[in-house]
Structures are given as structure tokens and as C-alpha cells.
Image (tube, rainbow, N blue to C red):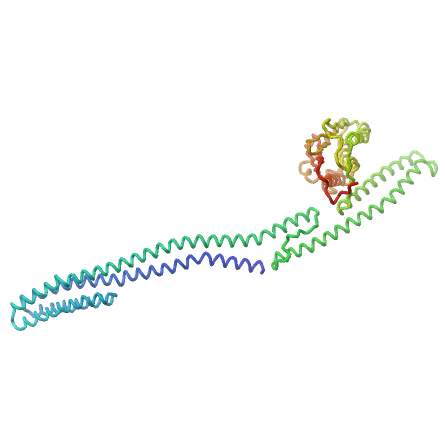
Length: 490
């Protein structure tokens, strides 16, 4: 499934989850609307018909009395008009949904209607006295059982109306509770769906980002947890990244092999040139004048610099190819720092720089490490740089101590220092600070020192303040094993 399809389905699913409570609420509102319509149309019409019926009965009583007293045709017409209007109200009750109640009331009304017909017959026969007696019977019917029937009909309308209201309240409460629960549930499901989609997209991207960062730092190993098997754009990107990384690893290996072969092949002609220059300087091939001797010395110096550069390139190529091997033995502290003093003391004295090596008494007699590489390629690089950049009259100090778990060595100088914006990059290959540094080396010494310390399982760092000097600190573990791929213990 592609990412676009996954996103479309996620958005559609969230939309459905959010719309579902609304659909449910709309359904419940329709029920409430039905009940409200029923209350307004059915029960309202019933109340209106009942009120009209009671009014017509009262007017019928009045019209019958007038007709009995006066005997005019207009009174007779008014009386029967009230009878017809009352029966029409009964029909309205039946049409409003109260047919059975209206039928019971109509039965009693028929008795009243027969009483009205008897009054009409008696009046037509001229028997006003009997008509008055019949009027009393009609009045008793209206005031007695018929009023009770109307009261019962009113109660039935009230009960049904109240039941409708109760149903509406129950529906409203149920709808409210259900809607709140549905909103919470659907919101939780939508959140879970969104989080799941986010994680399925961001987790592999984060892993790819970490892998890209490792590749950028020079590690060309593809992690196993990348989503190579996904059938979407992220899987395609992961597969492309894997192919690219394998290609970069192959190119890096070929570069390391080329540097190793090239530097190894360069050592032979350099040694030959150095040998001939030394023989000429010793006058094996005849006398040389003073200018020629000076030129030979300069040639020898450049040959030594070139040889150092070739050796550094060879070490770098071995480090990058994983071919650097350390000889981990017990380093004798007194001998280790004594040789450093003997190696760099004369050079410091020649440059009129105060040089001191100060191991603390609490140092152990030995510590594990490759003495030659630590002395020549780590401390040798640091001290050489310190002496190179410290002006005449300055000081270079080497201190050593232990914190119980590490041997800590510091190389401090009083040179010009390193700018703060350059400090994070000083251990990068070929990085140099300033034009003066570019004329004095290739920028590989600190990179080699960093890799050797790292291969010992230790750490190296630097702090510097421009104009106040630089301090390099090396931490070498006393008990931890060095990095396995860079060690051959003998």
C-alpha cells in the first residue's frame, strides 16, 4: 500500500469516526422531532377538540333553554347547530388519535342528542311544560355522566401527552449519554488511528535519518531494522538507500585500498631518494660545496616530511579499512613518560620553551595499551603540535593521573589557542586551523590520534581559549577492553 493510499484511508477513517456520533445524534433528533410534532398536532388537536366540545355543550344548554322558553325557529336552529358542532368536535377527537375514547363519549352524547330531539318534538307539539322537564334531563346528562366522560377523556389526553414527554426526555438523556460516549470513543479511536499512521510513517523515517547520519559520519553499514520489505515509498527509499550505501562502502574500500597501495609504493622511491641524498651529503660520490650541502639538508628535511605524510596516509587508509592493529601490552609508566621526556626535551630546549612531564605518584605501575602508538602517534602528535605553535618563552606541560578507572593524560600549552568555531572539527581528517598550519602539515595527526585513542576504548577532547593556549585530555581505561575490530593482542 502506498503512502498516499494509507493517508487517504486514515483521513477517511478519522472522518467516519468523527461523523458517526453526528449521524447517531441526527437520528435521535428525528425521533424527538416526531414526538414534538405528535405533541403539537395530535395531543394539541385533542385538547382543542375537547375544549371546543365542552364549550359547545355549554352553548347547547343555553340554546335549549332559550328554545324551551321562547320557542322561536332561530332558537331551534341554534340548538341543533350546537349539537352538530359538538358531534364535529367528537369527530376531531377521533381523527386526533383518540377514536376509542371519542366513541365512548359519542355513545353518551347520543343520549343527550335523543334528549334534544325529544325537547324539539315536545315543543313542536306545543307541550312546553314537558319540554322543560326534558331540558332538565338533558342538563343532568351533561352535568353528570357526560362531564365524567369528558374528564376521563381529558385524563387520557394528559396521560398520553405526559408519556410522550417522558419518552422525549428519555430519548434526550439516552442520546446525550450515548453521544458523549460515542464522541469519546470515536475521538480515542481517531487518535489511535492517527498515532498508528504517524508511527508507521515516522519510525522508519527516523531510522533512515539515523542511518543517513551514520553514513555521513563515514560508517557505511546498513542497519538490519530498515524497512526494506515495505511496499510503499518508504520501502523504496530504504532499498535505494541500501544500494547507495553498499556502493559507497565499495567506493570507500577501493579508495582505502588505493591509498594503501599508493602510499606503500611511494615509500620505496622516498627511501631511495633519502639514501642517495644521505650518501651525497657524506661525500660518497665526491666533494660538495657549502651551497650544495645546504641544498641536500633541505632535501633531506623535505624527504622526512614526505615520509611522515606517507606514513600518516598509510595509517589513515588502514584505519578506514579496519586494518589498524594494536599490540596491547602492559605499558610501563616510568619508561613510557621517561622516553617522552628524552624525545621532546631537546627540541623544547632548542626552541626555548619550558617543557615538563609530570606523572602523579598515584599512577599504577602499568596500564594496558599499545605503547608505541600511544607515545609516537598520539602524544607525539599532540606534543609536536604544542611545540610547533607555542612561541619562544612559552611552556608545554604533560600531566598524568588516574581516577581509579582511567589513566588521564593532559597536554597543555601556552600557544595562541584554537578559535571556538574551529574546535569541534580539529579531529576531522585534513582539517587545519589557519594558513600557518597548512604550511606545516597535512591535517592528519589529530585524526590518527583520535582513532587510536578510540581503538583503545578511550576518549580524547580539547579545550582552548584563543590567546591563552590549548589543553588536550586523553582518557584510557585501565580495565575495559579495546575496540575488538582494531586489536590483535600478543
